[in-house]
Image (cartoon, rainbow over all chains, first blue to last red; front, side, top):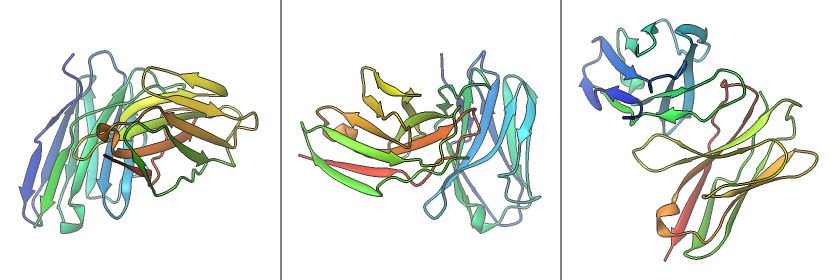
Length: 115
Length: 108
């Protein structure tokens, strides 16, 4: 298995631009998570999906952030408009069951820089 | 969600056993304890999970006392490649929150 796939691996954009991060979970996994990591705030859970349905988006910073999971094999995290404080590494993770906390498999991350 | 407390950093030397303790005084009856490892520029990686007593796998051991208010991750005979941040998480579903973790530095 290729593991969790994220694209792009690096993104540099200017303030005000729209940014879309993509994630392909491991085949067969039915839970998907988006995290953000910065030096100041550590690793934060933004949102997670079970069976393509958003379960908890309380970690999404504000309305500029939105996430979708149109099918079991694809999810996007969109920031519109982007701001310099959104600069961070964004991780996607997936796991096979929403019940007892199963092992989460993380992708390599997308390093976002907003100038 | 139960809050966890772990040391910010630890130093060790190659070949030593390292024990990282995590406090979780407000752990709920149905909460599990999970540890992750994160290397620089990589996503976290699952190490071990337990509910009570002791769990051992090929990478580490996890010791959980009867009151479950703390847990200890034990890494036997660490090497330089074990230098990483170690996170302790407590929860009963996948809505687990990462704390600051413990930055372990293994020296030659």
